[in-house]
Each structure stands twice: as structure tokens, then as C-alpha cells.
Amino acid sequence: MKDLASLSSAEFKQFLDSFDNILCDCDGVIFPLHKPIINVKESILKLRQCGKRVRFVTNNCFDGFMLLSQIFDKTDCKINLDDVVYPTLAMIDYFKSINFDKEIYVLGFPIMKKEFEKAGFKLADLPDKMEDSRAGIRTFAKINPNIGAVIVDADLNLNFPKIFKAATHLKRPDVIFMTGATDRRIPVGANFEFMGPGYFQQALIDFTGRVPLGFGKPGLPFSNYVNKKFNITNPSKTLFVGDSLEQDIGFSAQSGYQTLLVLTGATTMDHVSENNNKEWVPNFYVNSFGDLHQLIIDKLGI
Amino acid sequence: MKDLASLTSAEFKQFLDSFDNILCDCDGVIFPLHKPIPDAKDSILKLRQCGKRLGFVTNNNVGGFKQILEKFDQHEYKVNLDDIVYPTAAMIDYLKSIDFDKEIYLIGFPIMKEEFKKAGFKLADLPDKIEESRDGLKEILKSNPNIGAVIVDVDLNLNFPKMFEAALHLRQPDVIFMTGATDKNVPITSDLVFMGPGYFQQVLIDFTGRTPLGFGKPGLSLSKYVNNRFNITNPSRTLFVGDSLEQDIGFGTCCGYQKLLVLTGATTMDQLSKTTNKEWVPDFYISSFGDINRLIKDKLDI
Figure 1: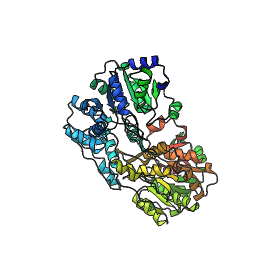
Figure 2: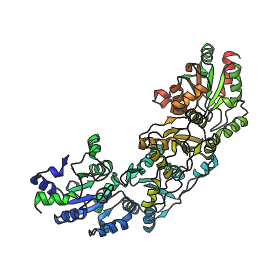
Figure 3: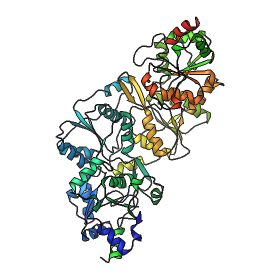
Figure 4: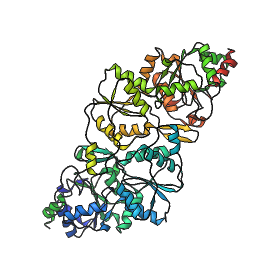
């Protein structure tokens, strides 16, 4: 694991020549978490100048493409719809490929649900409250036979009735079980972390005994979609830039990409040194994605 | 591990003489789960006739003490109020013993909350929804300095905002963390198993890194309360009768009691033979608590 800033010019050239594509996580890499990330726009433009294709792979279905493109437009860095992949897109693609026409039970943000509806899918109703009694519980045990898939992603208004109804339907083997983001910790501002959807997915996995199809990082179905969408035939010539050991570096190990860890997000140098999981060790690290601009100028005179 | 029904008369006498106290779980042991438990009432009377003191230790807080008493009445089991222990009673006793006077953040049934209020404690308000925006998040990040304890028990209307606020307050090491029932699987009927509070407590334990004081079986804090309440000085002369491997047999092991498993509740013979956890292996097992009456008659002629 090498610090990009410490490479010699020759080594840095070798590094830059080793990939054609760059895939970037967004939160904590391009979008600030704790404090502003300077020179993001400059780094993207410089990498494009070097002939690299820069695209984005995020677990974040919350902001949706609209917000992403607003943010990028503000920084004068135009991105196309086709340059961004997030779980909802991968799931929609999968459903279409199997001609899915039943109802989908979605635990996720409203914006995620709207995207499924726009894509022509029917969403099952979600419960809100449960009557505090055994009779209340029995009502919830009733199966809706039209539900053909259960999706579990981040939901700030997740509640027990919604989870229990998901569990009840997952007891049927023909109901597809899908997850999006699997993060356990979601940084919110400098001082707080939310419990991520990973915890609630784990409870459902333990309770039902079912293993979900992973349409987020890390997830094999998601990695298949990313490679298909971005026409990646030789994964080793793709560099993945991320801030999360489990979600980004782990995902890349699964996909066969090279990896660059940034320290502006979920992971500190301490986390890196405490890590025992071999799949989560990046090839390279750099303080910030924004540093790439200056490093290319300094090391290669470009 | 021996089947009580297969003991010789001499062995059965030795068994009966080896304890003075019997502590029984309720649901699945003397209160039916799948089908009626005949002769439970007679077994209680017969054991008292043999000079044994009977107490009852249940994790079921949800209906409060009133509901527990109603169930005893319904089945015509004669008991004293003092013979029944359940998590709320143990928690209230503990909080009084430390002169607790702050607010309690209580995730639990409405009736449980009523019982704490009646005992003179102040309860903190719990959030209901989070506005699904980055601004909505800021609301929920505010901490209430009056909260001195967080209690997590069964809550059919548990939701993410409540869990997150609990986690937020548990970041303060002086905020007491208490759990009641820790069951993961709660059988409601023969074909309906409910996701128990154990899953959600586990999320909080993993996320905060804090270990709660356990006031439900198999918790150490409950065992202290039980021994105090029933004046148990020599645990090996107490027999614990239960239907759950983790909650009841585990509790029996934790307390140093002898352990008798019944098969009319959460555990089948199949599950019993497959268990690998040494703490969950009972000393004896029997089809039903109701069989004890007939066994005493047959083996000892009483």
C-alpha cells in the first residue's frame, strides 16, 4: 500500500499509465463530509486531460441524479446521466432483464421509490403503525401474494412494522431479496454517524436465513452491472477511488479493479493500520482526491 | 442431559430432594403457546405439597404486571404477587437502589411506560418521524442532557429515529444502558415467529460498543434481583424450568441453578439435540411441565 505523494516521477507515470478508467465514489471523495475538498474539479479536468475517463459509482440513492448533476454543474464539471451508477439503476436494470411484473416492497428513501415508479414498477404499500397487541401482530403476519421482491436500503423512517412485514414476505423463497447500500456507518457532518442500513439488513438476514442479492458496494450483482454499464472488459485497467474500506476497497477487490483510498471521508489512517481484512487493503492512498491535480503537475510536468 | 420420565424411582427421589426452590418461566411452560398444557395446575399443587417453593420468572413485560396476573387467574394458578418476577420490576428496583432521578429514554410498550411512571420516574419524549432531508437530520442530532438511562425492550412501533436517539445518548458513558427481554425469536403461534427485541438491541450494542445491564433472562442484573427477591443463598438448590435454550437454560447456567427444559414452547427435541452451546444444555428435560404431577405420583407414590 503506497502513498501516491511519495512516488517518484517514474513510479507515478507508471501508476497513471496503468489504468484507462477511473471510477469514483462520491460522498467523502468528491462531496465533502467533514470539511470542503478543494481542487476536486481541477483533478477531474486534469485526469480527463490525461485521457482518463472519470465516472461515478455511489451507494447513495438519497440524493438522486438530479442533485448530483446540480452539484457538478456548480463546479463547472459537466457529467452525463450515463456517467453515474447507484443502486436504484442497477436494480431497475435487473428487474427489466427478468421481466419482473409483480409488486416491489421497498424500504428506502422516497426519491428511490419514485424512480421505481417512473421506471414503470408497482410498489407495495408499507405499514406505518402496529397495534400494540398479539392481534396487531397477527394482522402483520398476513401475506400480500402480489409482492415479488423486497428491497432494503437506507430509510430514515424505517420502523418495526415495515421490517417485520419484509421478514414475513422473505419467508417465501420465490420473493427476491435485494439490498442497496450496505454501509453500517453513515457519517453525518463532522461529529456524528448514523446507523446505516447494513445493521437492519443483517437482522433480516439472521432472522429469515436468506442471503440477499447485493446491488450496492460491495455486491457481485452490482459489480456486474457497473462493468456492463461502463463497458469494462479488463478490470485491472480501472482505478477505483473511494473512502470506505468495506464498501469501496472491498467492492474493488470483488471486481478486480486497482484501488486508491482517500482520507477525506469514512476512513482515517488509524482505521487503515487497524484493519485485518486483506480484501480491504488498497493499492494506493492519498490524502485527498483534490491532491491528484497538483501531483500530476509536480510529478509529470503536465 | 436426562429425560425425567426415564428416571428410576430412586433417581427421581434424588432429583426431587436436590432442590428447595423451583423458578418457572411462564410462556411456553405454564402458559400455552401451541396447544393447551394439561395438568400444569396440578403439577404446581403437587410440587408445593412436596415442600417446594414456587416462583415465576418471565421476560414478558409487554402487558405489565396486570396482564401477567390476569393470565395466572385465567389458568387458575394460585400464586402470590411476590412470587412473580419480570424485567420492569427488576429495573425499577435497581433504579430506586441508586436513587435515580433523571429522565429515562424508554423504548418499550405503552404499559411498560405506565409502570415506570407509576413508580415515580420521569420518561423522556421519543421522536416519531424524521423529516427526510439533510435539515431534518440536524433536529435529531440534538442531545437531551436530562436523560440518565436508556432502556430497550419490545416495542412494536420501534423506529429509526428512536434507535438513533438512543444511540446518541448512549455515547455518554454516564448514561445507563439497560435491556429487558433479549429474545431474538418470539413464538406467537405454532406457525408465527416474531422478530424479537434481541435483534435491535444487538444493533445498538454493535453500533455504540456498549454492553447493557441485562434485566431480562439471561441477564446478570436480573439474576441478582431474582436471588435477592427469593432469598436464594445456595443456587444449586434451585431448579429453573424453561422452554428457551438461550433465555431460560442460559439464565439457569448464569445463576448456577439446575436446569429443566420443557418441550411445549420455543424449543423442539430437534433443536435441543443440535445445540452446540454448552451454556444452553439443560440437566434434565421433560415433554411438559404438566407431566410432573403424574411422574411424582408414579415414581414416588405421593
